[in-house]
Length: 188
Image 1 (cartoon, rainbow, N blue to C red):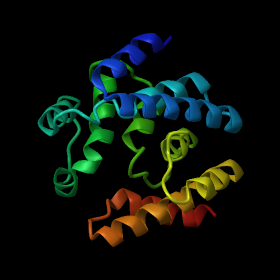
Image 2 (cartoon, rainbow, N blue to C red; image 1 turned 30 degrees about the vertical axis):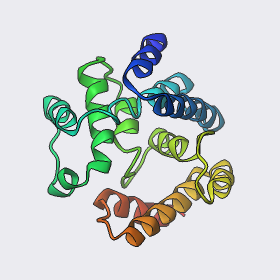
Image 3 (cartoon, rainbow, N blue to C red; image 1 turned 90 degrees about the vertical axis):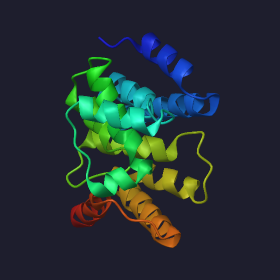
Image 4 (tube, rainbow, N blue to C red; image 1 turned 90 degrees about the horizontal axis):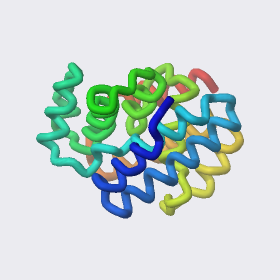
């Protein structure tokens, strides 16, 4: 159903070796988490492969891809280039690769910010990106343990980590991240 080899060749030619390796690691982790939690492993692998497909593209190109897909950006998103790639990668997958599966599109779309009422699949992609084998940030082992115990526990820990980090840097927090944090607290 999905042309995985085509996607691998695409990211191999459009991403740096570092980002290509990261995408491969996220795909493997997504597949592992999908198997553990009863989600579609092939779709998780594809979403993991393609989650950063536009990450290293020029910001103007990313904006054009987002607009071509009919997505709109808030002022906060326009001014926070760190979230462009989640939107542009979802848009690219939809418009350029013809992938119409909403799980894949939304898994990619919210893999950086999260959102309120995340689906099982969205949490898998979000946490696969956070805990893939190539990650080595402080607390990554705790993150992996939390995620192995429960996706919601992993989400709570990752969101707390992310929000704290963003606050320390004096940057704006995307409203989807705040909404996701509050939703996770309600779920737990």
